[in-house]
Amino acid sequence: GCGVEDLFITQAQKPPKIQTVLFIRAVDCWAKGVRVDMTGRNPVYAMTAKWVTISDCEFNGSHDCGGGGTGYVGFEGAWDCLMENVKSTNMRHAPCLEWGTSGCVIRNSTFINSDAQCHSGWSHENLFENCVVVRPSGQGSYGHGFFTTSPTDRLHGPIGPRNVLYNCDFTKVPKSGLVLNGMNENWIVLWNRFESDAESIVCNSVNFDHVVAHNAFVVTNPGRS
Image: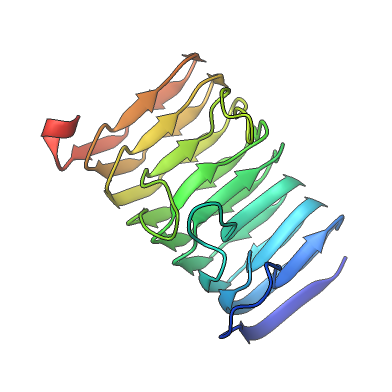
């Protein structure tokens, strides 16, 4: 394994679309106490990786946000990884899981001005715990609290089963709180709080065997629900 600790990195001028810290084909690696301001693409990212830990980090902005951008905070094609005690601001999708990611945990973290997503490729059996998502709008985000891609999306595809949202807060959401866009099975949504302008939960196409219990829902614009 390898790791980076206690770094401050800033990219004030717009660089090429590159990650600042990338763990690729990595096992048992870590990033701890890293702050990245205005990354080129993803600030600290694990791709095709296992047992990677990203903890006690702060990420502020990406030059690659907006429509089609990839200013993400999360994991891609990763297994059994952990993100905790992270704060991000002005990213595009954060927290975000992609391309078959499974067994990963994102917990005890705050994400401001970005939406939470399972963004592609049958990501499944992951846990989001004690996360706070605030104002998921701007920076190219979709404006929902938590969003999953659909089976009709040829670029990203559907999202797999048994993902868990536990004790998370989604606040100041301009659109829907949780959007499950189809082929979603046996999600567990427990003890969360959703404050949204539109519907609390939207299930499109085929959705089945979910457990949704003990959540609190506030619709701030009931005319849209």
